[in-house]
Length: 112
Image (cartoon, rainbow, N blue to C red; front, side, top):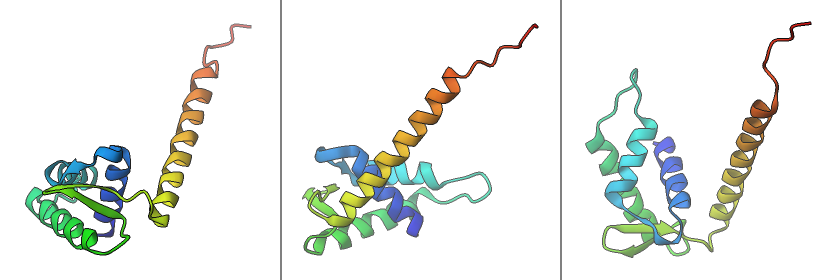
């Protein structure tokens, strides 16, 4: 369940200021966590995501804010979210650097 929470936060960070409906968030979490060897039910994921978002949004200054009925976004004033955003940006920068190194390396065979 901790993995679901991390995925919810990651999806909402990527969604930005507009947020996302619960159904789309649970769909993203299901796609990220489902695997061939450990299948999960989409209904179970949706139930967890819906209850997690509802419970978390009721807490003052929590990581999730309810925009309107069934739509949530990340709380930009929350310190933990600021750290999570920075961590996500660092991971993306490292991935981009690795991709650039792979592209720039010459994999052709040396004939002489």
